[in-house]
Length: 123
Image (cartoon, rainbow, N blue to C red; front, side, top):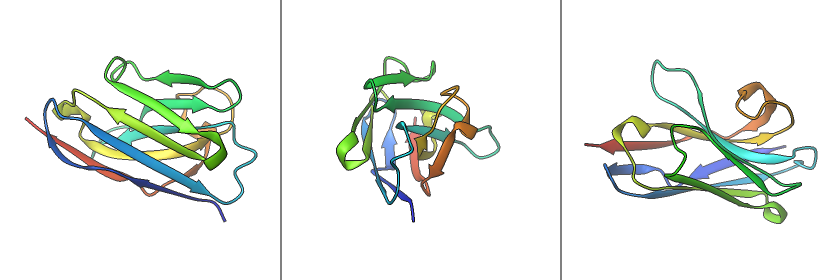
């Protein structure tokens, strides 16, 4: 079975930093990368970041570009999200997922998902 587990969330103040981690286990050979989405209560799921293994390319959502950085370890099927200069609007549940193909910002192109980790940023 494929399992993804996120960690590193918590409660911080605006301007603080957090580093999220995600580890994937199981059969993930068919996936081409790993990424992050986030979802706040009552809001649409939003693309955050993606790293592709084949060319080691990264993609960031417009709302986090310049503040967040994604990195990963292909051999270990792990991905990290370094979040700096956090804002209250970053408050959400953050999910990691395995990327298959197609438009990187479309959640339907991600095959397996973790349970999510809560990030709360106070003003």
